[in-house]
Structures are given as structure tokens and as C-alpha cells.
Image 1 (cartoon, rainbow, N blue to C red):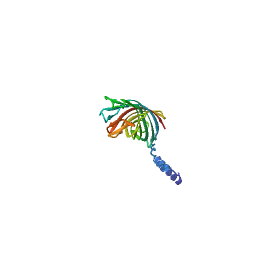
Image 2: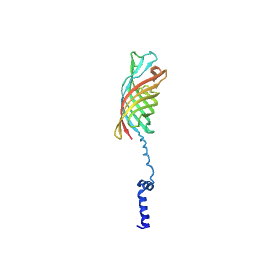
Image 3: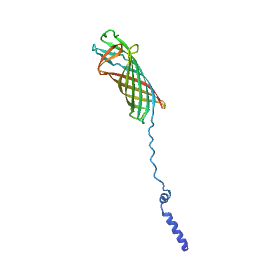
Image 4: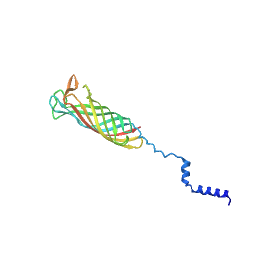
Length: 224
């Protein structure tokens, strides 16, 4: 074998001795893999129609010191919720019940009847906050606004400042529907001594600071 053959053979042995991994490292120059992008939870709005049951509250009669009780019974409500982020929403809430104001354990001073038909409607602006994301699970809510007392007939209505606080649970039914179960408490601020339900003369003279009521509701939600 000549000198040129020896040189060629040496070059071949040297090439075989270089690790294959070195070639791979030098040849690719690949960047490290990227972290997967975090997908933000979607925002969600909705409109809810409720059926409920409202629990009694009442007023103290200024003349007798006895109670004018609001009767308990079925109620209905509607709410529109608009997404702020994945957990919170603005809420417009209206709840109504056709109730009666009843003299409890006494006879009212004439000419007042012992039972007066009285519609009680709450108009509130507030919000909801979900413990997880909007669309399922536990949430809390609250709102501020007014309570409208409407006795109908020839008596004048009354408007008072009020608020509500509550807790609920939302059960999704697919992409566009859900069920809400809620309990809300209402506090209406009234004057410590004021005329109420008047027309020429006042039927009720009330005494006290607040009217409190509670409401249990179930609602069907259209989600969008």
C-alpha cells in the first residue's frame, strides 16, 4: 500500500470515531420547544326567567303598635346578566309579587280595611360573582335600587330605596341553556314614622326603619 493509501485510510478511521450525536447537534440548531399558550376562560352573558316563593315581611302600625303583615306566596322575576370577565357580570334584576297587607291580631282604625291588596316589585342594578368560571357552580349576587309598593284601586303608590343579597347555584344544560337555583334577601328602607297608602286620607300609618323579605327561586337561563 502506498503513502496515499495510508493517508486515505487514516482519514476514514478518524471520521468513524466522531460520535453521530455531534453531527446531529451541529446540523439542526433547533430552538427549545415553546410552552403551550394559556387559553383564557370565555366571558358569558345571559337572560334568566324565574319562578319563586317570597317570604313575609311587615310594618308596625303607628296607631296601635300591631303588625301589618305582607302575605307570603308565589313570585316571578327576570334578570339580564352582562359579562365583565370570566367570573363577574353586571345584573339588571326585577322581581314582583301580588301580595296583600293584612292586619295581624288587631282591627285597624276605621275607615281602614283589615286587608289591602299590595303589589311589591324590586328594581335593582347589581352583579354576580362565580367561585369558578361563569356558567356553572356556586355564585353570589347583590344589587341596589328601589322597591315599588302598588296598592292599586284609588290609593297612591310608594317608592323606597332597597337592596338585595343572595347566593345561587348554576347547572349548565348544554351550550345555550342552564338552570339557576337562588336564595335572596331584601331590605327596604322606610321612614321611622310616615304615612303609607294615601288618597285624601292615609290608610296605614307605619312605624319602623326597614322592611325585610326573603325569596327562593328557580330560573331557566338563555346563555350567550
